[in-house]
Amino acid sequence: MIEISMEVNGREVTDQVEGRTLLVHFLRDQLGLTGTHVGCDTSQCGACVVHVDGRAVKACAVFAAEADGRQVTTIEGMAGDDGSLGVIQQAFQDHHGLQCGFCTPGMVMSAADLLRQNSNPDEDEIREYLEGNLCRCTGYHNIVKSIRAAAAAMG
Amino acid sequence: MYSFELRQPTSIGGAVRALADGGQILGGGQTLIPTLKMRLADPGVLVSLGRVDSLLGICTDDSGRLCIGGATTHAAVAEGGGAYPALARLAGRIGDPAVRNRGTIGGSLANNDPAACYPAAVLASDAVVATNARDIAADDFFTGLFETALDDGEIITEVKFPVPASAAYAKFLQRASRFALVGVFVARFASGVRVAVTGASESGVYRWSEAETALSAEFSPSAVDSLSVAPGGMIDDLHGSPEYRAQLVRVMTSRAVAAC
Image (cartoon, rainbow over the protein chains, first blue to last red):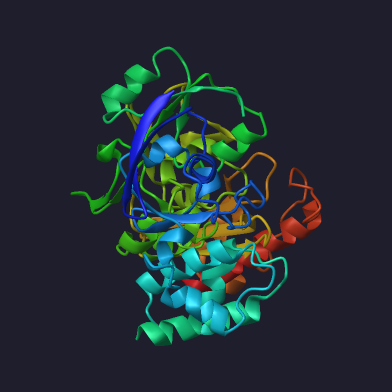
Protein backbone atom coordinates (compact mmCIF):
# COMPACT_ATOMS: atom_id res chain seq x y z
CA MET A 1 0.00 0.00 0.00
CA ILE A 2 1.10 3.56 -0.70
CA GLU A 3 0.12 6.61 1.33
CA ILE A 4 -1.11 9.44 -0.87
CA SER A 5 -2.29 12.98 -0.17
CA MET A 6 -4.07 15.33 -2.49
CA GLU A 7 -6.41 18.28 -2.45
CA VAL A 8 -9.88 17.19 -3.54
CA ASN A 9 -12.40 19.99 -4.06
CA GLY A 10 -10.33 22.22 -1.82
CA ARG A 11 -10.02 19.69 0.99
CA GLU A 12 -6.76 17.92 1.90
CA VAL A 13 -7.16 14.15 1.99
CA THR A 14 -4.69 11.42 2.89
CA ASP A 15 -5.28 7.70 2.50
CA GLN A 16 -3.69 4.38 1.64
CA VAL A 17 -4.05 2.91 -1.85
CA GLU A 18 -2.66 0.05 -3.89
CA GLY A 19 -0.52 0.91 -6.89
CA ARG A 20 -3.31 -0.34 -9.13
CA THR A 21 -6.06 1.71 -7.47
CA LEU A 22 -7.59 3.93 -10.12
CA LEU A 23 -8.32 7.56 -9.31
CA VAL A 24 -12.02 7.02 -10.00
CA HIS A 25 -12.23 4.20 -7.45
CA PHE A 26 -10.30 6.23 -4.90
CA LEU A 27 -12.74 9.10 -5.31
CA ARG A 28 -15.86 6.96 -5.21
CA ASP A 29 -15.01 4.14 -2.82
CA GLN A 30 -12.59 5.76 -0.40
CA LEU A 31 -13.76 9.38 -0.41
CA GLY A 32 -17.44 8.69 -1.09
CA LEU A 33 -17.53 11.14 -3.99
CA THR A 34 -19.89 9.10 -6.12
CA GLY A 35 -20.80 11.93 -8.46
CA THR A 36 -17.95 10.80 -10.70
CA HIS A 37 -19.29 7.84 -12.64
CA VAL A 38 -17.73 4.70 -14.06
CA GLY A 39 -19.35 4.24 -17.43
CA CYS A 40 -17.42 2.13 -19.87
CA ASP A 41 -14.26 1.63 -17.78
CA THR A 42 -12.35 1.53 -21.09
CA SER A 43 -11.68 5.31 -21.32
CA GLN A 44 -14.13 5.78 -24.17
CA CYS A 45 -17.20 7.35 -22.56
CA GLY A 46 -15.96 10.22 -20.40
CA ALA A 47 -18.46 9.73 -17.54
CA CYS A 48 -15.48 9.70 -15.15
CA VAL A 49 -13.89 12.99 -16.26
CA VAL A 50 -12.43 15.02 -13.37
CA HIS A 51 -9.82 17.76 -13.29
CA VAL A 52 -6.26 17.13 -12.13
CA ASP A 53 -4.36 20.39 -11.69
CA GLY A 54 -7.14 22.05 -13.68
CA ARG A 55 -7.03 19.74 -16.72
CA ALA A 56 -9.75 17.28 -17.68
CA VAL A 57 -8.67 13.64 -17.43
CA LYS A 58 -10.47 10.33 -17.45
CA ALA A 59 -10.27 9.16 -13.85
CA CYS A 60 -10.61 5.53 -14.95
CA ALA A 61 -7.31 5.86 -16.83
CA VAL A 62 -5.20 7.47 -14.09
CA PHE A 63 -3.84 5.75 -11.01
CA ALA A 64 -4.75 7.39 -7.71
CA ALA A 65 -1.06 7.49 -6.76
CA GLU A 66 -0.32 9.52 -9.91
CA ALA A 67 -2.55 12.24 -8.45
CA ASP A 68 -0.55 12.29 -5.20
CA GLY A 69 0.23 15.91 -4.36
CA ARG A 70 -2.08 17.26 -7.07
CA GLN A 71 -5.28 19.29 -6.99
CA VAL A 72 -8.34 17.30 -8.01
CA THR A 73 -11.76 18.72 -8.76
CA THR A 74 -14.82 16.52 -9.18
CA ILE A 75 -18.42 17.32 -10.02
CA GLU A 76 -19.08 17.82 -6.30
CA GLY A 77 -16.55 20.67 -6.38
CA MET A 78 -18.52 22.52 -9.06
CA ALA A 79 -21.32 23.36 -6.64
CA GLY A 80 -21.18 26.05 -3.96
CA ASP A 81 -20.53 25.14 -0.32
CA ASP A 82 -24.24 25.60 0.35
CA GLY A 83 -25.12 23.11 -2.37
CA SER A 84 -26.14 25.75 -4.91
CA LEU A 85 -25.41 24.75 -8.47
CA GLY A 86 -22.43 26.15 -10.34
CA VAL A 87 -23.00 28.16 -13.50
CA ILE A 88 -22.51 25.19 -15.85
CA GLN A 89 -24.63 22.88 -13.70
CA GLN A 90 -27.40 25.49 -13.59
CA ALA A 91 -27.25 25.87 -17.37
CA PHE A 92 -27.63 22.09 -17.77
CA GLN A 93 -30.72 22.20 -15.55
CA ASP A 94 -32.22 25.23 -17.29
CA HIS A 95 -31.70 23.86 -20.81
CA HIS A 96 -32.51 20.20 -20.16
CA GLY A 97 -28.90 19.23 -20.78
CA LEU A 98 -29.47 15.89 -19.09
CA GLN A 99 -31.89 13.05 -19.55
CA CYS A 100 -30.84 9.99 -17.52
CA GLY A 101 -27.98 12.02 -16.05
CA PHE A 102 -25.33 9.32 -16.13
CA CYS A 103 -22.97 11.16 -18.48
CA THR A 104 -23.68 14.57 -16.92
CA PRO A 105 -20.80 14.77 -14.42
CA GLY A 106 -18.29 14.10 -17.18
CA MET A 107 -20.05 16.48 -19.56
CA VAL A 108 -19.97 19.28 -16.99
CA MET A 109 -16.29 18.69 -16.16
CA SER A 110 -15.32 18.61 -19.85
CA ALA A 111 -17.39 21.73 -20.48
CA ALA A 112 -15.58 23.51 -17.64
CA ASP A 113 -12.20 22.67 -19.16
CA LEU A 114 -13.38 23.82 -22.58
CA LEU A 115 -14.67 27.15 -21.21
CA ARG A 116 -11.40 27.67 -19.36
CA GLN A 117 -9.60 27.56 -22.71
CA ASN A 118 -12.26 29.14 -24.89
CA SER A 119 -14.74 31.44 -23.20
CA ASN A 120 -17.08 31.64 -26.20
CA PRO A 121 -16.98 28.39 -28.18
CA ASP A 122 -19.29 27.95 -31.16
CA GLU A 123 -21.41 24.86 -31.65
CA ASP A 124 -18.80 23.05 -33.75
CA GLU A 125 -16.07 23.70 -31.21
CA ILE A 126 -18.25 22.36 -28.40
CA ARG A 127 -19.17 19.23 -30.34
CA GLU A 128 -15.54 18.62 -31.23
CA TYR A 129 -14.44 19.13 -27.63
CA LEU A 130 -17.02 16.63 -26.40
CA GLU A 131 -15.78 13.88 -28.71
CA GLY A 132 -14.60 11.92 -25.66
CA ASN A 133 -17.90 12.21 -23.80
CA LEU A 134 -20.71 9.89 -24.82
CA CYS A 135 -24.38 10.43 -24.01
CA ARG A 136 -26.30 7.21 -24.56
CA CYS A 137 -29.59 9.13 -24.40
CA THR A 138 -28.14 10.98 -27.42
CA GLY A 139 -29.08 14.27 -25.78
CA TYR A 140 -26.23 16.16 -27.38
CA HIS A 141 -28.36 18.99 -28.76
CA ASN A 142 -29.37 20.29 -25.34
CA ILE A 143 -25.93 19.60 -23.90
CA VAL A 144 -24.43 21.91 -26.53
CA LYS A 145 -27.19 24.44 -25.83
CA SER A 146 -26.43 24.28 -22.10
CA ILE A 147 -22.74 24.91 -22.64
CA ARG A 148 -23.46 27.85 -24.94
CA ALA A 149 -25.74 29.26 -22.26
CA ALA A 150 -23.11 28.70 -19.56
CA ALA A 151 -20.54 30.53 -21.69
CA ALA A 152 -22.92 33.46 -22.08
CA ALA A 153 -23.71 33.48 -18.34
CA MET A 154 -20.03 33.48 -17.46
CA GLY A 155 -19.58 36.42 -19.81
CA MET B 1 -5.98 -5.91 -13.12
CA TYR B 2 -3.12 -7.87 -11.64
CA SER B 3 -1.38 -6.32 -8.66
CA PHE B 4 1.91 -4.51 -9.23
CA GLU B 5 4.30 -2.20 -7.46
CA LEU B 6 4.04 1.40 -8.74
CA ARG B 7 7.24 3.42 -8.62
CA GLN B 8 7.33 7.15 -9.35
CA PRO B 9 10.92 8.32 -9.70
CA THR B 10 11.69 12.01 -10.16
CA SER B 11 14.78 11.76 -12.37
CA ILE B 12 15.85 9.83 -15.47
CA GLY B 13 18.58 8.15 -13.43
CA GLY B 14 16.03 7.18 -10.81
CA ALA B 15 13.79 5.72 -13.51
CA VAL B 16 16.67 3.70 -14.96
CA ARG B 17 17.47 2.34 -11.51
CA ALA B 18 13.80 1.57 -10.85
CA LEU B 19 13.73 -0.45 -14.07
CA ALA B 20 16.98 -2.28 -13.35
CA ASP B 21 15.19 -5.41 -12.19
CA GLY B 22 12.71 -5.40 -15.06
CA GLY B 23 9.25 -3.90 -15.05
CA GLN B 24 7.31 -1.79 -17.42
CA ILE B 25 7.50 1.94 -18.14
CA LEU B 26 4.26 3.89 -17.64
CA GLY B 27 3.87 7.04 -19.74
CA GLY B 28 0.46 8.67 -19.78
CA GLY B 29 -1.18 5.28 -19.47
CA GLN B 30 -3.87 5.85 -22.05
CA THR B 31 -3.05 2.57 -23.76
CA LEU B 32 -1.30 0.71 -20.95
CA ILE B 33 -3.93 1.19 -18.23
CA PRO B 34 -6.76 -0.25 -20.40
CA THR B 35 -4.36 -3.08 -21.30
CA LEU B 36 -3.70 -3.78 -17.62
CA LYS B 37 -7.43 -3.76 -16.90
CA MET B 38 -7.93 -6.51 -19.45
CA ARG B 39 -5.14 -8.48 -17.78
CA LEU B 40 -3.22 -8.48 -21.04
CA ALA B 41 -0.14 -7.31 -19.14
CA ASP B 42 1.31 -8.37 -15.79
CA PRO B 43 4.34 -6.12 -15.30
CA GLY B 44 5.07 -6.78 -11.62
CA VAL B 45 6.68 -3.36 -11.39
CA LEU B 46 5.36 -0.27 -13.13
CA VAL B 47 7.67 2.75 -13.35
CA SER B 48 5.81 5.99 -14.01
CA LEU B 49 7.65 8.79 -15.82
CA GLY B 50 5.00 11.30 -14.78
CA ARG B 51 7.17 12.92 -12.10
CA VAL B 52 10.37 13.17 -14.12
CA ASP B 53 10.24 16.89 -14.85
CA SER B 54 13.29 16.80 -17.13
CA LEU B 55 11.20 14.76 -19.61
CA LEU B 56 8.69 17.60 -19.96
CA GLY B 57 8.74 20.54 -22.28
CA ILE B 58 9.26 21.85 -25.78
CA CYS B 59 12.19 23.87 -27.10
CA THR B 60 14.11 24.67 -30.27
CA ASP B 61 17.74 23.54 -30.47
CA ASP B 62 20.72 25.20 -32.18
CA SER B 63 19.95 23.33 -35.42
CA GLY B 64 16.41 24.71 -35.47
CA ARG B 65 14.88 21.37 -34.53
CA LEU B 66 11.75 21.28 -32.38
CA CYS B 67 12.68 19.15 -29.37
CA ILE B 68 9.90 17.60 -27.31
CA GLY B 69 10.49 15.88 -23.98
CA GLY B 70 9.42 12.24 -23.92
CA ALA B 71 6.75 12.70 -21.24
CA THR B 72 5.21 15.77 -22.86
CA THR B 73 1.47 15.38 -23.36
CA HIS B 74 -0.33 15.65 -26.68
CA ALA B 75 -2.18 18.69 -25.31
CA ALA B 76 1.10 20.41 -24.49
CA VAL B 77 2.41 19.77 -28.01
CA ALA B 78 -0.85 21.03 -29.52
CA GLU B 79 -0.53 24.22 -27.47
CA GLY B 80 3.23 24.72 -27.52
CA GLY B 81 4.38 23.16 -30.78
CA GLY B 82 3.62 26.21 -32.90
CA ALA B 83 7.12 26.20 -34.40
CA TYR B 84 6.02 23.08 -36.32
CA PRO B 85 2.34 23.77 -37.09
CA ALA B 86 1.58 20.46 -38.83
CA LEU B 87 2.89 18.57 -35.81
CA ALA B 88 0.91 20.71 -33.35
CA ARG B 89 -2.25 20.13 -35.39
CA LEU B 90 -1.62 16.38 -35.44
CA ALA B 91 -1.18 16.34 -31.65
CA GLY B 92 -4.41 18.30 -31.21
CA ARG B 93 -6.40 15.63 -33.01
CA ILE B 94 -5.15 12.54 -31.18
CA GLY B 95 -7.87 10.81 -29.19
CA ASP B 96 -10.04 13.29 -27.30
CA PRO B 97 -9.20 16.23 -25.01
CA ALA B 98 -9.02 14.22 -21.77
CA VAL B 99 -6.81 11.60 -23.44
CA ARG B 100 -4.58 14.36 -24.84
CA ASN B 101 -4.11 15.71 -21.31
CA ARG B 102 -2.52 12.40 -20.25
CA GLY B 103 -1.10 10.65 -23.32
CA THR B 104 2.55 11.36 -24.09
CA ILE B 105 4.69 11.44 -27.21
CA GLY B 106 7.19 8.98 -25.77
CA GLY B 107 4.45 6.57 -24.80
CA SER B 108 2.87 6.72 -28.23
CA LEU B 109 6.17 6.11 -30.00
CA ALA B 110 7.29 3.31 -27.68
CA ASN B 111 3.94 1.57 -28.18
CA ASN B 112 4.07 2.02 -31.98
CA ASP B 113 0.44 1.22 -32.56
CA PRO B 114 0.03 0.59 -36.31
CA ALA B 115 -2.72 3.24 -36.44
CA ALA B 116 -1.16 5.87 -34.17
CA CYS B 117 -0.53 9.38 -35.52
CA TYR B 118 2.84 10.33 -34.02
CA PRO B 119 4.86 7.59 -35.76
CA ALA B 120 3.89 9.07 -39.14
CA ALA B 121 5.11 12.52 -38.07
CA VAL B 122 8.39 11.18 -36.72
CA LEU B 123 9.11 9.10 -39.81
CA ALA B 124 8.11 11.76 -42.36
CA SER B 125 10.05 14.45 -40.50
CA ASP B 126 13.21 12.30 -40.29
CA ALA B 127 13.17 13.01 -36.56
CA VAL B 128 15.60 11.62 -34.04
CA VAL B 129 14.34 9.65 -31.05
CA ALA B 130 16.73 10.28 -28.16
CA THR B 131 16.82 7.84 -25.26
CA ASN B 132 18.76 7.61 -22.01
CA ALA B 133 21.31 5.52 -23.94
CA ARG B 134 21.52 6.81 -27.54
CA ASP B 135 20.01 8.68 -30.48
CA ILE B 136 17.91 6.59 -32.86
CA ALA B 137 17.08 7.81 -36.39
CA ALA B 138 13.41 7.56 -37.33
CA ASP B 139 14.24 5.20 -40.20
CA ASP B 140 15.73 2.76 -37.66
CA PHE B 141 13.22 3.23 -34.86
CA PHE B 142 10.02 1.58 -36.10
CA THR B 143 10.69 -2.11 -36.64
CA GLY B 144 7.22 -3.62 -36.99
CA LEU B 145 3.78 -4.04 -35.48
CA PHE B 146 4.02 -2.64 -31.91
CA GLU B 147 7.79 -3.14 -32.24
CA THR B 148 10.57 -0.57 -32.00
CA ALA B 149 14.35 -0.48 -31.73
CA LEU B 150 14.05 0.29 -28.00
CA ASP B 151 15.65 -2.16 -25.61
CA ASP B 152 13.83 -3.26 -22.47
CA GLY B 153 13.88 -0.44 -19.95
CA GLU B 154 15.17 2.12 -22.46
CA ILE B 155 13.48 5.47 -21.93
CA ILE B 156 12.60 7.96 -24.68
CA THR B 157 13.92 11.24 -23.29
CA GLU B 158 13.34 13.54 -26.25
CA VAL B 159 12.16 13.60 -29.85
CA LYS B 160 13.95 16.04 -32.16
CA PHE B 161 12.01 17.17 -35.22
CA PRO B 162 13.67 18.98 -38.11
CA VAL B 163 11.05 21.51 -39.23
CA PRO B 164 10.19 21.10 -42.93
CA ALA B 165 9.59 24.00 -45.33
CA SER B 166 5.99 22.80 -45.40
CA ALA B 167 4.14 19.80 -44.06
CA ALA B 168 0.68 18.43 -43.42
CA TYR B 169 -0.97 15.38 -41.91
CA ALA B 170 -4.16 14.05 -43.46
CA LYS B 171 -6.02 11.68 -41.15
CA PHE B 172 -9.01 9.62 -42.15
CA LEU B 173 -10.56 9.24 -38.72
CA GLN B 174 -11.77 5.90 -37.39
CA ARG B 175 -14.55 7.57 -35.47
CA ALA B 176 -14.96 5.08 -32.63
CA SER B 177 -11.31 4.67 -31.66
CA ARG B 178 -10.22 8.10 -32.93
CA PHE B 179 -7.09 6.47 -34.32
CA ALA B 180 -6.31 6.84 -38.01
CA LEU B 181 -8.08 4.44 -40.35
CA VAL B 182 -5.33 5.72 -42.64
CA GLY B 183 -3.16 8.76 -41.97
CA VAL B 184 -0.49 10.24 -44.22
CA PHE B 185 2.14 12.75 -43.16
CA VAL B 186 3.87 14.66 -45.96
CA ALA B 187 6.97 16.73 -45.17
CA ARG B 188 8.67 18.85 -47.81
CA PHE B 189 12.33 19.62 -47.19
CA ALA B 190 14.83 21.41 -49.45
CA SER B 191 16.44 18.00 -49.90
CA GLY B 192 13.22 16.30 -50.99
CA VAL B 193 9.82 15.09 -49.85
CA ARG B 194 9.19 12.39 -47.26
CA VAL B 195 5.84 10.58 -47.01
CA ALA B 196 4.90 8.36 -44.05
CA VAL B 197 1.76 6.25 -43.83
CA THR B 198 0.05 4.99 -40.67
CA GLY B 199 -3.06 2.88 -40.16
CA ALA B 200 -2.59 0.95 -43.37
CA SER B 201 0.14 -1.67 -43.14
CA GLU B 202 0.14 -4.79 -41.00
CA SER B 203 3.78 -3.95 -40.29
CA GLY B 204 2.99 -0.52 -38.90
CA VAL B 205 4.10 2.89 -40.12
CA TYR B 206 6.13 3.00 -43.36
CA ARG B 207 7.51 5.38 -45.95
CA TRP B 208 5.84 5.43 -49.36
CA SER B 209 8.94 5.81 -51.48
CA GLU B 210 7.17 5.97 -54.88
CA ALA B 211 5.17 8.96 -53.68
CA GLU B 212 8.32 10.58 -52.29
CA THR B 213 9.99 10.31 -55.71
CA ALA B 214 6.93 11.62 -57.56
CA LEU B 215 6.39 14.50 -55.12
CA SER B 216 10.07 15.45 -55.07
CA ALA B 217 9.83 15.83 -58.87
CA GLU B 218 6.47 17.61 -58.87
CA PHE B 219 4.92 18.76 -55.61
CA SER B 220 1.22 18.77 -56.43
CA PRO B 221 -1.81 16.76 -55.25
CA SER B 222 -2.15 15.15 -58.67
CA ALA B 223 1.44 13.91 -58.70
CA VAL B 224 0.35 10.69 -56.96
CA ASP B 225 -2.74 10.09 -59.12
CA SER B 226 -0.99 7.68 -61.44
CA LEU B 227 0.65 5.68 -58.66
CA SER B 228 -0.89 2.41 -57.63
CA VAL B 229 -0.82 1.06 -54.09
CA ALA B 230 -0.86 -2.72 -53.70
CA PRO B 231 -3.32 -4.01 -51.07
CA GLY B 232 -0.99 -6.85 -50.12
CA GLY B 233 0.07 -6.55 -46.46
CA MET B 234 -2.56 -3.94 -45.68
CA ILE B 235 -4.65 -4.26 -42.50
CA ASP B 236 -7.92 -6.12 -42.97
CA ASP B 237 -10.56 -5.49 -40.29
CA LEU B 238 -14.23 -4.59 -39.98
CA HIS B 239 -13.43 -0.92 -40.56
CA GLY B 240 -11.81 -1.38 -43.94
CA SER B 241 -10.54 -3.96 -46.40
CA PRO B 242 -6.94 -3.97 -47.68
CA GLU B 243 -8.21 -2.60 -51.01
CA TYR B 244 -10.04 0.24 -49.25
CA ARG B 245 -6.97 1.15 -47.23
CA ALA B 246 -4.76 1.05 -50.32
CA GLN B 247 -7.11 3.51 -52.01
CA LEU B 248 -7.09 5.72 -48.90
CA VAL B 249 -3.28 5.83 -48.87
CA ARG B 250 -3.27 7.57 -52.25
CA VAL B 251 -6.23 9.82 -51.46
CA MET B 252 -4.89 10.93 -48.09
CA THR B 253 -1.45 11.58 -49.57
CA SER B 254 -3.05 13.81 -52.17
CA ARG B 255 -5.04 15.64 -49.47
CA ALA B 256 -1.94 16.12 -47.33
CA VAL B 257 -0.07 17.64 -50.27
CA ALA B 258 -3.01 19.93 -50.98
CA ALA B 259 -2.93 21.06 -47.33
CA CYS B 260 0.82 21.80 -47.35
